[in-house]
Length: 173
Image (cartoon, rainbow, N blue to C red; front, side):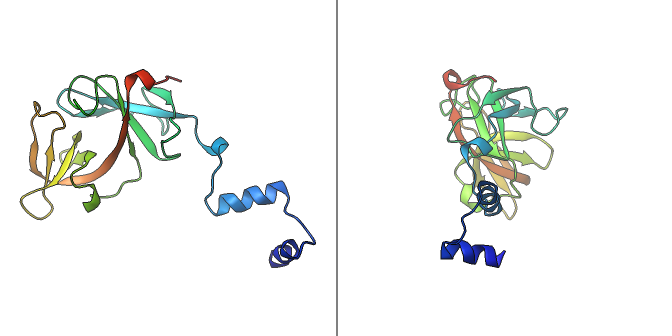
């Protein structure tokens, strides 16, 4: 209450631990113990860059879980495992890629960057995002130059890929 804050500021009262916890949560501050300790790996990126996401899992579940790296955002993150050479030299077979789940549409600031994108035909791919030849058209170039590009497609969404986690740093949970 306003009176409680006035008393705290005047030094007549101090916050209780549960009050401090409620205040920090209300303002969106988190502590390390608030972070999920694992992240679900929801699919694999194959040789053609197509991500086979498995939708049979409940939200937060997946093919398997890995220990969450400290640098990874705390919430709304999904992962896929690289299978084969589709992302070389950027990421290797067995490495994990991560992206934020709450993406809506396609963001201009992601142009030129690796993204996971859902094409309007339903495919989900790992590619580099570029402008297409017309309005609402996008070109998706392969990270590995030996794999084909996808030119002038409409996208449902594109999410910037966070730095890959090398396979030798992946800890299954």
